[in-house]
Image (cartoon, rainbow, N blue to C red; front, side):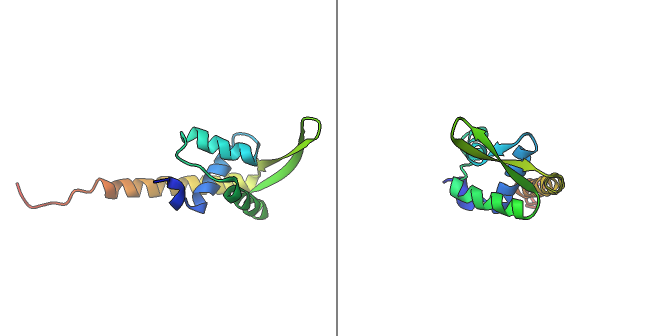
Length: 115
C-alpha cells in the first residue's frame, strides 16, 4: 500500500519547509528530492505539491522567485521566509511529540495478571 494514500497535507508542509530550510528549490526538484530521500516511499505528485506551495506562499511562510535555466526556460524557485522557519520549528516539535506518543502506544503490553 502506498503511503501517499493517507499522506496528510501537514506532512507535505513539514517536508517542504524542511527542505527549503536547506536551500531554495523549484517545485519538481522538491517532489523528486522527497521521493529520492524517502527511498520512493513518499511520492508527492506535482499536482498535489503546487497547491501546497501556493498555500505556503499565501501564509507568508515561503516566497517564490523566477530564475533563468538555460536560454529560454524559466524556473520558479521557492525560498523559506522567517515566518516559515518559525512554522517549521513548531511542526518539527509537533511531529516528534506525536511520533513519540504513537511509539508508546505501539509498545504497549497489557498486564495480563499472570506471573
